[in-house]
Length: 533
Image 1 (cartoon, one colour):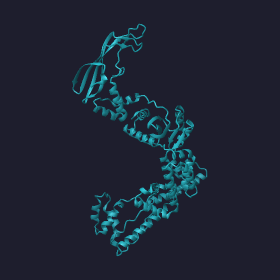
Image 2 (image 1 turned 30 degrees about the vertical axis):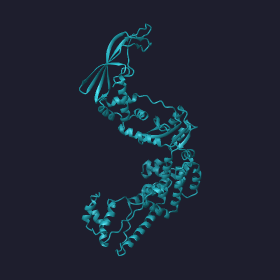
Image 3 (image 1 turned 120 degrees about the vertical axis):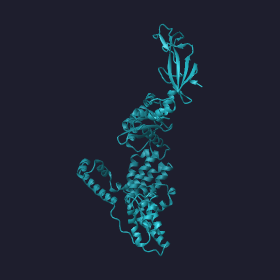
């Protein structure tokens, strides 16, 4: 029942409330002096130690251990007496058994301070949160050999202000170390102190590339495929934004096809007048203002005016001025602008209203009651204003089709055609029919996808040459970035290594930080990262 008490004499067991007391003593055997090693059994005195142990049937256990203090028989030894120890049970001066210590450390590493303290209450071994945190801090760092394949990535200690770096052994999937910042010098110093790294997986950050080149110049750098694909997606968004008019043209063509289909279904229907052109939306106003600011910022930059002075003249924040200055064209800033207004409060329920109106339900109050359970939170007046044109024609015209957003179209281009929904595939085909440039873009994206998924990195140069031959400035910028990091990108598109494992550990770090309510100091966070299972 008590394997950790092997070699000891159990004199008795008593139960008092929620506590079980075990009376234990050592046997009368010879014990070696801790200084000189001379064995002795001459007893100087006896005393009792109280050790907390793991629970029995949900009750707290206290071991009342009676130990001896012995004389050292070696006259040359500086120690006159010494207390006997029980190594398998507890350490010197410990108040908990080694078994309970391991349990508390496991709870502390898994749950942290407050949550761990609540858990120990259920384990009948209640301790405070500070005790658990001291348990973590007292643990030694794991002794890892220098990894052959190293993964590097940053994580936020305080988002937007302070970042650290996590190092992962890709082959063993274990964290190796945590660095206090994400600078090139810190990483280079660590690599010099841990020689033997042959391959380093990283993202596209230039600081890590410089640090690896300085600290381990012979190591092969591997750029992560996900980050390369993400960079390509950003370039695709800029290209689509530059040709956003094609999205509107393709949408109008599809709307006309829908109208013709409706006429064929009901040839006797009354003609429905075309709605008036909508007024300039807030999105359009923002686009006009963005173009004006972009022109003004680049005009002042050409005159040699600094960013700070430009912000003062135009009344813009320095970050806003920097964003406009970095954009070669205003289209790069309009990527997230979409192609229409914000969705209205009634947009989601318009198809249902049109269906019910054409079925003969023209009572606005009744329609209002029907869409309320569906989630409508607007007023009756909004519904009355929308239904008013239907009363003049006697029929509800199909809701106007909105052109897809730039980001949505970019996601269709970046997706596998076989996995696209049929409706989305049709919309994308209509857009490609209206834009030869986007058709060329799709060809390049799918060619790059083949290179990436089938690890054909040797074909990258041919692909980049083909992109540079077409008039797609955003993709040209992406290619220039690939050329600056050519060796690492080629290795990432050729070798099976990637930073996926590192990203998984970064997500785990986010969980640990939230678990500790954002109050984990770097030293404590480092221990939990390195020692958690």
